[in-house]
Amino acid sequence: MKHEDSVLLHTGGSVRRITLNRPRALNALNHAMVLDIAKALDAAEQDASVVAVLLTGAGERGLCAGGDIRSIRDDALAGGRASLDFWRDEYRLNARIARFAKPYVALMDGIVMGGGVGVSAHGSLRVVTERSRLAMPETGIGFVPDVGGTYLLGAAPGELGLHLALTGDAVGAADALLCGLADHFVPSEDLPAMLAALDTCTTSEAVVATVERYAGAAPAGELAGHRDWIDACYAADTVEEIVERLESDGAPAAKQTATTILAKSPTALKVTLAAVRRARRLESLEAALDQEFRVSSAAFTRPDLVEGVRAQIIDKDHNPRWIPAGLAEVTEEDVARHFAPLGDGELGLGPAAATAG
Image (tube, rainbow, N blue to C red; front, side):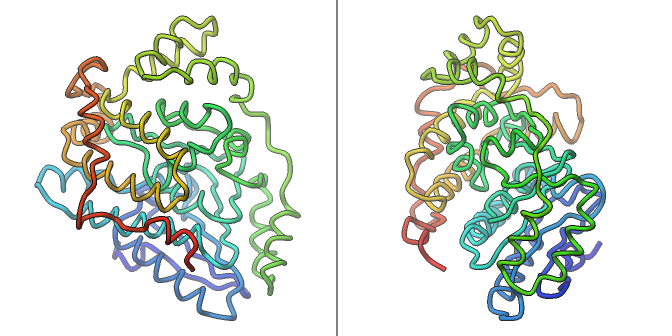
């Protein structure tokens, strides 16, 4: 498929629809798509006849499964830098979405992971359905949550965000709402009617009212019932201590979670813990994205990213050989290196950008 067909634009009434159109790849984002979305947002914001933007995904499986990690692995193996250019523009897009001056409706139906969270969860009207499955699964491929994920997860109640960041677990509609990753639940059977109603809206206020009119209560989630052990276990200072608390907790789900965590990249786990906790102290999404770009730039040079994608996506043997192989072998210096300033290579969104636009 030609890259220009990977993002489709359609204006229904006064709402500009942006459709991610790579359904066979679960609408995975590539660099051209990021640039096309940014261009579409610029045009929509400058067009007085457009009152809102609606983001949807083609196909039946989901909005977006994330970035095109096969291409990122190939780039890393070739010693390239195209992935850094991609992330630079992707993270700028994430900030652009958060600052967008008109309602930004994200239809988070089906699978929404990684980069898919980045183009949806920073919007102003985030809609989930009973089919929604949201996740930041980066630790399983030797990477660290990005696209503003550390900022979003750091703001979740208690230690829920850290739990999702370390495990990479996917959550449904109710838990996405609980964690602040979404705003409204709309049953999937009502989506066609809601989309048709949005096409008739001529004001931003009408767009907001329409989404709220179709919204209802989500089916019960799971995380609320696990808050006690999640908050207690993840309050520990280190990943090793978190795992120890999970293993010694009386809840069967806690013990299973320890097993889940121990299968992830040890380096990614320790860096993720530090990144989420640092993000909680940052003053803006832009500052978190600057930090994430430093982390991603460092992780791109590590063997775990290439190995993680091989094990999970290429060979699918689900048996990654992490380097180093254990948590105890990951030093404080290893972690600190991921947060080192990049000099002229910084993303440079900065705190001042938080009030721009």
